[in-house]
Image 1: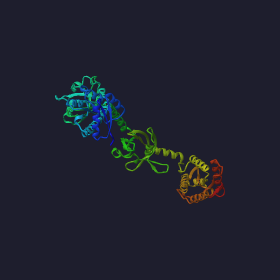
Image 2: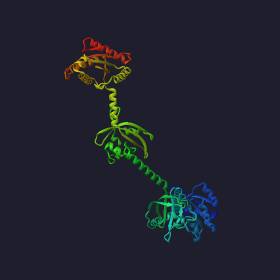
Image 3: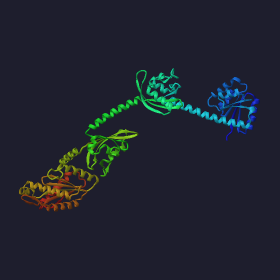
Image 4: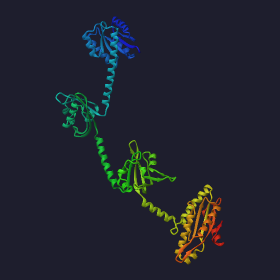
Length: 549
């Protein structure tokens, strides 16, 4: 245990020596210092730390209280004990009332008693210092608090009497404490003294049950404010009223409710679906149009992950959740548009265009999703695309689309130095078919040819009608030798086709010209020209055969 640090303030050397001897007899391990006066003691206290100070009060007479008070006003000093030759009751009383922990008489105490008195005095003093620090801390908190605080006492008359307030209370109500302390609440703060509020306050003071409520009060200038009030009993006859001006918050809440009502009216009348999610993608809003599109009522979808019904095709063909990617990538100002498939409650799907915008949701960001059913538009677009790229009679690519895709394919083949071949085919004696069986039969023959070729070719191949009975096929990743094999298979397959007509069964053959992409060749026209030359070579050498250039 560390030594007890003792300071004796004593101008009499004899009494100082007697105390030193008594201290040795006490058995206390002590560091002893002597100051002949209060001023000398202050110099020591400012430079060193002590556990206790003993003030010799003999000879001070009426100055005992002043000396002890002067000592205590210097801040958090060590415990102070009065030291006298013989403890007179009046000296002891004055010493303790002034703040001394004890009054010790040299003539009536032994070493053991001194040790016990010092330890108890130091312990009590430290507890008192801790309590004073706590009181100062809470007083500082109350003084700095934005919450207004009033303290009232329940007088013997049954009235609540104003005892004090913090600065926030004075600022909120526009009234200071001057002239109000000790006055009944009805006179001090009439705006807080409605009959109902007084009854609540008095009930808390009498029974100790806390109360919380909001009240509209009118200040002296006629301005109304909304106060959030809480009343607590802090002693058997005292209450604390804590209140906060929530006028701005209440007005903002009302404005928010009105805004929400307007938005809900608009969303209820909207033809497009409107949904909102939290930061985890869970649905928190779902308007009637969204319900009509999907079949999901609000009760079905609220709280569920929106990605369960929003689906889109990823580049690898897998299904992905577009909102999930959006939520992961957004930065608080994100927005985006994309087409997705939405799964209805009955399991069917429809194509929708969604517009995504991020919105603050708690500590993160949620999403606002505008949903538009574009099934009809997509069908129309698809039909227009089909009409723009497809030969209306046969269903093969039309000349324009075939040329476009062939140029793209050849560009890819040249870039990566991959093989590519072209076939051009023509029905032999097609004019004779039209003349003999009629144009309707000729059209059926062209359709049959197209169907057979599409069935025989790969999905990666391109097949188109260039005009009349002339067709072409572009074969990516195909060498000239392989193209010759493909051409022979097509020739044999087409020779076995039978087309029924009113005038009989039609059977026909085809002539095919084949060529492959050559080193350094740039133009599609060159391949088409060679394939055409090979086609006419096949026709000129007997038809129903394949020629290569």
